[in-house]
Structure formats: C-alpha cells, structure tokens
Length: 577
Image (tube, rainbow, N blue to C red; front, side, top):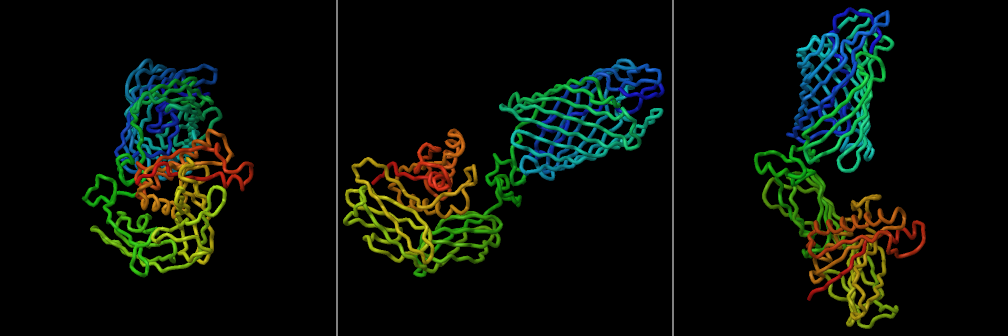
C-alpha cells in the first residue's frame, strides 16, 4: 500500500516486486554465482500469489486497490555454455483482480544472461554479473507490466560457509518513466540479500529480502521492500520442489500484504567440470587438464599426450631405484622406469635416488610418439650402521641385512651408503624378515635396529617407516613432502611380489572425538593405498583400515605423544613363495 493521491487510471508500471530467480539453487529470489556445466538445461514453473501489492490512499483516507490479487505462473528456462548462462522468463497471469476487474493474460517477457566470474562453489568468494532485458508484452490493464523496454544490470557476490550460503545482488534497473501525481516511477537502484541453509537429503531453508529504490525521488512510505521465507527439497535426481511465504516490510509500490510461492523444477544434478573444457568430470578422463579439441579423440576430455619413459641410471649405466618429478605444462611424478603420458612442451625434470646427488635439467617432450628420457645420477655417500636382535634385545648370530640392488651384508659398525630414502631389510634363519624405510641425508650417519620375531611367534611382520607420512590438517590429502617416502614404499612392494597381502593402518592422536578420528584415520589409510596403486602396486594386494585413537604407541598428552601416535603402519599379512 502506498500513501499518494493520483488519477483513477491504473498506473502503467509493474506492481510485482518479486520475481523468482531463474537458476539459484539455495534461494528463491536472490541470484547466485554458481556455474553449471556447458550444455546444462533447467526448467522451472513457479506459481506465486500476491495479495494487495498496489493499493493507493487518497488525501481523505479512501483506499483504491488497483491490484488486490495476482496469481502468476513464472515459466523459467536456462541454458549454460561455459561461464555464460542465458535464461528466459515468461510470466503467465492466471488471474488478476483490482480496479480493472478480473483479467487473465501475459506479463512482460524477459531475457537474462549471467556471466560467472568466480563460482562460489569452487572459490572462497563467488562473483557474477547479470544483464536482463524485459519487453512490453503485457496483455492486461492491471499494473503488471511496463509500457516500454526495461533493463537491469546487477552484480552478484556470495559465499558459502559449509551448509550456510549468503548472497547479495546489487544493481541498477531501467524502467519507462511514469508520473503518478506527486510520485515519479523511474530508474531504480535494486538490492537483494539472500541466505540459504542446506539440510540433509537435498533439502534446505532460505530467506530473501529485496527492494527497489527510485533515483528520481524517494517519498516516505513509497519504497517497496519484501521478505520471503522459503525452502526446497529434491524429490528425485532431477525434480526439485520449492515454496515460500512472504510479506511486504514497507508499504511501497509492489510490496504485498501476503505472498505465497510454490514451484516445481526440472534440474538434473550439476556435474562439476573442474577443468572448464565442457566435458563434465564424470565423463572426463582428465578432470584437471582441459581437452585440446584438435579433432583427435576430443571426446575423452584429455589433451592428446606423449608417452614418456624416465630412466634413472648410475655412472656405470645401471638402473637405480629413485623417483623423479616433471614440472611444466602439467606436473607429474613417478619412479625410475615408469611411463607417463603428458602434453608436448618444455619441462623441468628433477631426479632423486638413494645414494645419489639430486639432478635437475630442462627437457623437451615432442608431439606424439613414445619418448624416452635418461638421467645419469652421481653417487653420494653416507654411513649406515645396522643392528639385528631378537625379541629380548640379544644380537642374532648370522643375521644379514641388505638394501635393494646390493647383496646381503653382515652386521658391521658402519657401511658407506648412498643418501636418500633407503629400504633396509633384515633376515636370519628361524626368524621372520623385517623391513625398515628411512631417510639418510648426504654426509649423515644413521643406525637401524631390527628386533626380529621367531617364525613360530605368531607376530605379524611389520614394514617399519622411520619417518612420518604427512597429510593436510584434518584431511586425507598426502602432502608432497611425503611422496618420496611413499615412492620407496611402493618400490618395496613392487620388488617383493611374495608379499601377497599387505595391510595399511591409519592412526590418529587423541584430539577430537573418537568417531571423527576413526573416520579420519580410515580416510588417510585409504589415501595411502590409492597413492601406492598409482605408483604401480596391484590393488588386489592392498587393504586399508583406520583405528583412530584406539591404538596409541605412547600414553599421555602433548605434541611429543601426539606426533608418535599420528602414524601410518604397514603389515605383511600373507607371504607367498
């Protein structure tokens, strides 16, 4: 309701303040920055009723309801191509009531486009621009359309905090000028603020508040503002039910006493497209590398690569155990002798091997065909001492130890070794073998102590890793600083196929809840398993399990105890011939 005097003719300005968003997923009115994959199509039918959105009061206090009731169906559709979404809004006026009587007809058609500059589902802050054009197609006499072309330009900014979404739309709106006695309806500043809260099962709640403010004049009580409380729920993979109820929070032009909204949408799941190549991730074999669309195998989502074999040799021309990293158009890594497929281009190849100096040089990967790269590494020495005892701490006569590539050695005070990540294996007649993996820096000295169990003791064989495997805080992502250690673990498993069953155990410290720690430890153990499979270890040989905080190595609190209890352990469950 608006307190103005005017002529009795209905104003030629739209009395609908609310219009449903074409593609927002967590609000009814406020647009978001979310970007759908290329080729994505949605359709919505939003039925909304407004009570007394345009009511005027003359100087004698007599009210005239130029628009007392509106029942409108907004037929909406959208199509996406890359960062651009285009949309169509067809307002069907099922019934209007007011000073002009009861009517049925069509409202102002609108075309809209959205450019997503930063998708809020992928970035900390979402940003988009929206442009909208409306056409004077209204067929009813009620004030539900403009008498000329209208336009809108607005900016979208939003952010998600877990299940909570907050968004704002700020812009300007151009409408044909209409003079209503002492009130001018003209170009306006528009603002919408929305909040959504996602519940489980594909449902959620929302709150929207919107307003339009005339630039020409601001008459007290004439600025419309409306608030809508809504919700949504996914009925199936593609059908979404939406609804809401709202009211005008001012008596401005277009703010209703009551608004009721319900709608049904056809919205297939928005499959992510991480590399923005137009091929959604579930059909994209290379989710983080864009297809080059050169006419050859463009449907798989991968740029056509070159198979590259990286061989690591010592000065005698013999293969050595080690790992390498390629940095360039794409980044990848592997162990010596591994083959990877990468796009053509210039790369920096870095090689690391136990007992050898690091080496780095630029390499050219040609287009197509197999390509081999050989790195010759120089020896570097460090000292290692080994002690092998039984369960009571007594030295075992005749025990031997070895590292891959060298024959067995007896226990000595110290032996000159090549620095890096070393795999040391100990064995003795009548005892279960044992393996330890450790880092030994160039020029450093280290000692490894083995405590062997007898073959009839029933104790499981453990592969000891004398360093931590590091993950992102509270997550299961393995940090790059642990890749060389896990590469060495993979080499051990590949070189010893007789280890037919290996169990990977994840453990956490006691901070956090027991259920959370159990889930985190299981996820980290599974992440290590996947990393080893990527390096060539057969998946069928590996199992993973998480024990959370239930099996600490040491009791107590404090970083010293926590760092020991946060670990990943490896056990050989079965050995073949």
